[in-house]
Image (cartoon, rainbow, N blue to C red):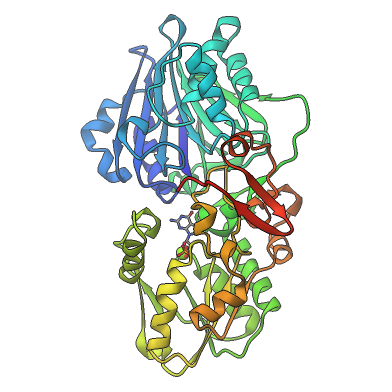
Length: 475
Ligand code: 5GP
Ligand code: MG
């Protein structure tokens, strides 16, 4: 996962990009970077670093990023290690010294094959990320056309998920793959155009939301232009398959993405969840922060009070970043602690948005028991995650997904829950306006693209007898 941001036609382009990245920080905490284009100097400036946005950029760095156009990136690695070499935006020189910067959110599904082919042909790669493939494909395609044509050609070679911002010689190209896996929106700020993964970045800048870049669309904005141009990447229709997990968990609740209000969707998931699984409980407690919005839906629908009785320490990073399982459990304890008086002798609905490895639930439910909870009815506002994501969500190998190994009843028994219910797929789809436009592969194994790399590396038999079998999965 990653966040991308871009702005064209503003004297403070880099600083506004810095703020935009700040708003998108939840989409990636490993590295951050900005490339700006200074028309007067006729050159680009780059600053990237490891860590959070405020740690990566100092005042001097922003001053050095001169010019009226900039793009930026925050990274959460899904391919390639978290190291400086892999930080984005990438900045390269192509034919005739033309500079090109690129920021990518998503995961390509045929990256290894293309990379092998390019390497056999003599290409020298500087990073281990799939995004670099775009740069090489574009550079090659430039021998027989404009940059615009070269981007379209590069996109015709790759498969999988890509929301892209490309900055070259003062122009911005904003691209969304034909399935539209990850979001990318556009907004207007005076005479400037602004692009961002999520609308919360526009709100921060008080930019006026215009619309999403459509799946399979490339938007081009020239320096000084008041209007944008739109180009289709392919002739043929491709089914739209937006990532439903963006609405379950990933996006900020104050964002509009895919034409949906993430906050309202999550509340609706909570309402549908409890309609499917009423129990006898006297209050609703969320796992903060991600479980809060579904919990509100649960509380309102069930007519029981919402209590904020699990307290989050806001100075702890995301649990997933911890390297080992024991560290991960410890950091859940550091991160979430119950309010004793709210637990003792109470029957509770406890709500989270998703269960992945089961670390959060395993660690904290035992504690609720220890504190004397009378009953724990665990509710999850998404279906069991059984299948890996190849499009950019960082789920572990299937062997580490608790729902591939155990049924909800088995999990409830292992954890000593009084009941456990996951939102059904129908209930989830009933929470969005256009259910047919979503990818639900992590719940169903129904992958919208071919997966050549997975199939040749390891035999993946999904959906066979309703059961998953993954062999030789790299850990
Ligand atoms: P588990 O503890 O079961 O492994 O993970 C579930 C928790 O992690 C939930 O509270 C959920 O909000 C959060 N979560 C779900 N998906 C992701 C993800 O892709 N990255 C991170 N950092 N957290 C996630
Ligand atoms: Mg959470």
